[in-house]
Length: 223
Image (cartoon, rainbow, N blue to C red; front, side):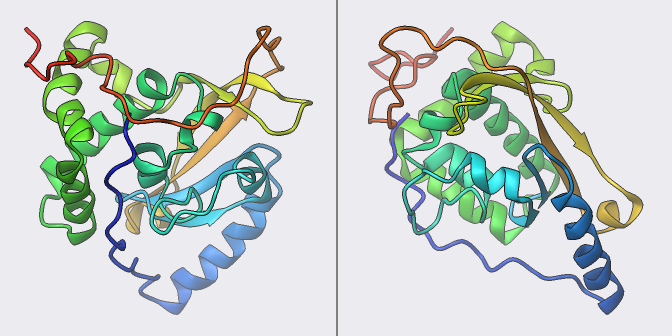
């Protein structure tokens, strides 16, 4: 996928509305830090409220970006950061399209949200991403089924910078608590598996401009 959009400064994320909620998040951050796998707390915009050291380590080699860093907004990172494909294996089918599908459902429910509107505008400004959203996504969902857009329980490939993990898979575990749910937040944990052997000649590649494989190169709608 192309990295053309993602240039708008994200809408500032709201903080916890009460001192009690703030204190809960501070304690939850201590709990999150004890988790050995990459784990983060996000709101419905995928703004990152909390992330542990294991999460930061996973993305430690990505280049700086003004609006799409993984520790700021994970959805923007997946969609717009040119380094996303160097960490997230099978980036298009395993990460980008499922998150686009989840985003589309969230927009249907919360279309008034300014943060979601800003992400939608960035998608619209990128011709390739817009083609993915309008043409590729419906085609992909028809081909693989609606369940492919679910995050909880999904097993997805990634490339960890630590050679002890290397090229591996992770199972996504999505959870919430009563207080996190009141904040419209979830916790996402990437449970790492044993490293797979790296294919000969494998290299970490930045994402470059190209058409989405599920969208015809000429940009015609798929049937």
